[in-house]
Length: 175
View (cartoon, one colour):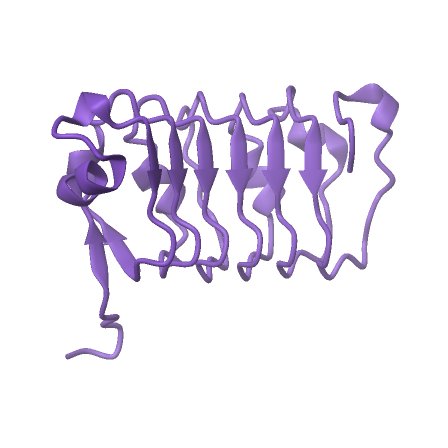
């Protein structure tokens, strides 16, 4: 076994069927996969779950930066919980997760240009980045992609540089 080996479970189509209580992928709409020691994803299985809208993957071990790109294979994903996964950075490619409205990334180790990456998610309306290691926020003009974001939760971060955003100029209901 190598040093990078992490023992755990693979998220594949069979696990999604079991968690969704269905015999067919089209019958799976919501899955709770929290605390199942999931360490990797069989991304080739995800595209079969065309009706899957809500996924809770909190408290697993999916702490790698391309996790959102993998989950983007779920065509209608609108609500995603990735809290408590030891994610320290994110890479968000262009034109992925176009329907994602709710994203919980709380209680990870996120730092760096997280909001700049998440600004590529055009439908995001609710975002929790609470209890991470975020120390600064980019200027508002760098976040033009977050047009419909209404609520941004940043509690318990290391914010030392915070340029005052003008709440009247965007759609935020709370910050």
